[in-house]
Image (tube, rainbow, N blue to C red; front, side, top):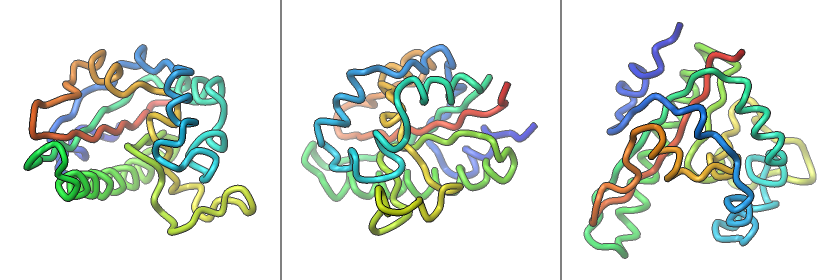
Length: 178
């Protein structure tokens, strides 16, 4: 069996934990946050709702797996308005998780990687006019699947907030299909 924990360490994640599979409960409130338009991706890309499926669909997809891994990147900020620090930490996380997801998919093609934030493979998504250009590389977010990331972290024994002057980005990979 592939050692996803070793791969995560090699990809530079600061915090790694086994994923509490019982915490993977899609919540309507999280989808409502998506629909509010805060990230401007709702109904605009294949990786986000409604294109990524209903909450029943995402629960069914996640329910097929027996194990998972949670990974985090923590960035240091000069102050709470340090947009450059936030962007750097996010870019570092996106790059590391993209590499980890690619490696995981090579080792276990049926795994389910869920990232932080919307898919960024394409400059402009083809939704809804044409099929996704890269369906095998596309990454939906944990939030798109209806997951309250802070609760998933808590139940998995991982902090979500690392104190003032920090920001964290969290992603996961589900594996070992039943």
